[in-house]
Image (tube, rainbow, N blue to C red):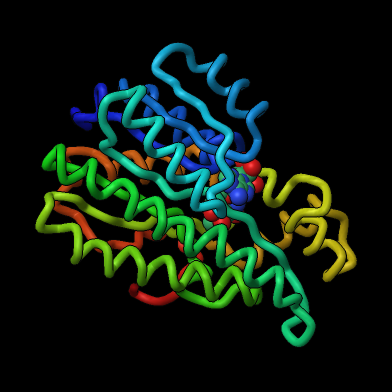
Length: 262
Ligand code: NAD
């Protein structure tokens, strides 16, 4: 299948690690020109070196309106156009419901709810100019069923509604807007020190990798976490020309973990 992504200018946020890194790599393999944003500039530069030409990187904190405005302007100036936006930067934290810090909740909302809205709004004028555009938001299955992470579940559910609202708003400009909803994915978000794997280990009394494996075996019909490239493949497809009539969808990529028919 020709995905029609050659020379498309693709923005990916949170591209220095995990799912974002694989999304960037998958678009690059399709011949796209990349504009990669992350707070981790060293990680971006490493990826840029691995991939080759056709990659622009910028240190961007997506929670900063000024950073986002500057980035989008720079991308349009340096690369001439913007075709695809992938809102992927994010994080997660387990915590007790009654004592979950309000400031962490707010910070998560800044990062995973306001930032995608802000960046979508900043890119829409460029999509209108092209007469074509595509947005893919990395939501989560925990936006569809609770994962016990209060801020994360709430904000990912909002991301699905943001996707739906923007899909209707953007359709007249020939822009599709979709979300991917991964189940648990093998990334540093689970495997790095202090992250979800360690938090799950603390809650279960197991070792980190043992807890991750237990969670997969007891919750995911396929019995394992996704590989980040399995999420990237879905993102690239949703942003492709053959998928352009698909809009407003929140696609599970979860090894069968969601039980509902939605
Ligand atoms: P990750 O920690 O490997 O990568 C997240 C990236 O986002 C990092 O490179 C980080 O530096 C960047 N980032 C964080 N704050 C930022 C900011 N303010 N501005 C710019 N960049 C910032 O995590 P991941 O697992 O690859 O997660 C990527 C996305 O996928 C997140 O939105 C996450 O919620 C979602 N997701 C992950 C899983 C999973 O199990 N790993 C499941 C469902 C959804």
